[in-house]
Image 1 (tube, each protein chain N blue to C red):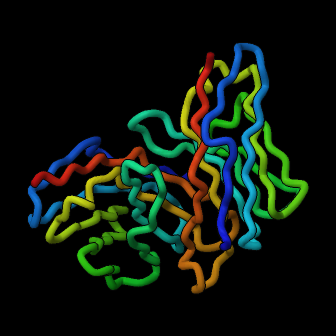
Image 2: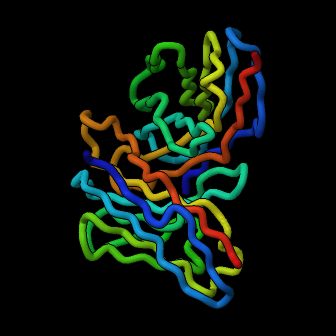
Image 3: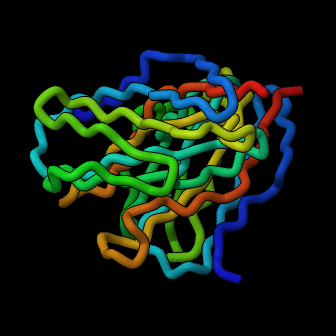
Length: 116
Length: 115
């Protein structure tokens, strides 16, 4: 089945530790995104990538880093510089401007990150 | 820069009644897409409806319809014959029609359908 896989589902971070959230897609989509969702809040864009080896900062990129070495993969690292990392993280992909997908984002099931 | 604003943090509606969720946005672009997404308690994101800014006709998907007012930069969602399964967070979203694929969301409206 085609889709987006995020792992792990739950992740715990110790203070001062970097952690990496995985996002893999087999939809052959060019664009991938990372969003942060705080309880009862909207989705805030962290980073997005429109093509391999290229990515842009979103609205809340500080304390996060990404890479896009392969089309299928867009891992997000939450660094120790992110002082309030507890949130639900959603990865998404977009197949491009065609009628086939109605410009919709395909989402993973999310990773809940908590601080120990 | 584009922004999307949802001014209603929470709403409730009786089952079978109609409810309208509001969304306003700010952009200097002329061609773009607008969306409503639903996030039920499972937290899985589901596309509800999509509107192309260059089309004057309001989009409709079964019980869901939009009122798109381009000059006012307003994009409201009407849910008719509300069902218990409509209980969810609803997010308004924006993407330009050309250039960057940046896709931004509003803060959401939590809708509760009451039996």
